[in-house]
Length: 202
Image 1 (tube, rainbow, N blue to C red):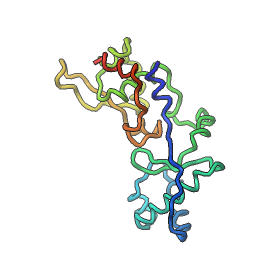
Image 2 (cartoon, rainbow, N blue to C red):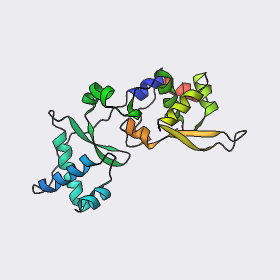
Image 3 (cartoon, one colour):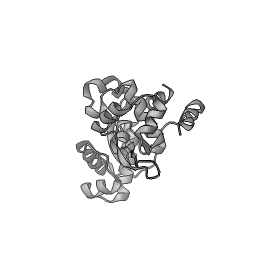
Image 4 (cartoon, one colour):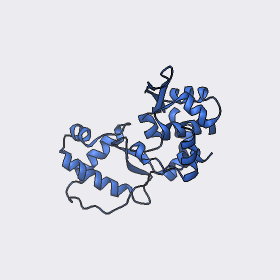
């Protein structure tokens, strides 16, 4: 499906620009690197600062140095901003090869139906079960249940102006982490045909 293709084509593009940083912060950069290595969740600059006991300004310089370091072709990992925090992640080309073995339960393969349901929720959120069914043409109940179990979507409220005030669904922080996005705003833009499909479904 076209919308599924939009989700699957998400690229975590990073500008590899040369950044000027102080030459005497290698030790602090190593400390920041260690903090990021030991943590499994994205960390804000303030959290890194408190953990490493160095100023936020120095943390920023360290991150710039590490970002440049990991941009080298012989590096298998990269420094990524996800959900507003910094985290060390495998480079996308390496992860595509290894994710089947090393992916966790939220990073396992999603079926075509699950991906399309997830795409609809990502682009239309907040969206009700009935609205998803209207777009897909089939009941989304099983897919919604599975996506909730994987913590990729959640209930985000109710549509008060609709009969029965049906539950609305939206994506989660785990969704952003799964697709290596900093925010929903980084989703690929829908093409004209996909936009038309969504508009007709309203």
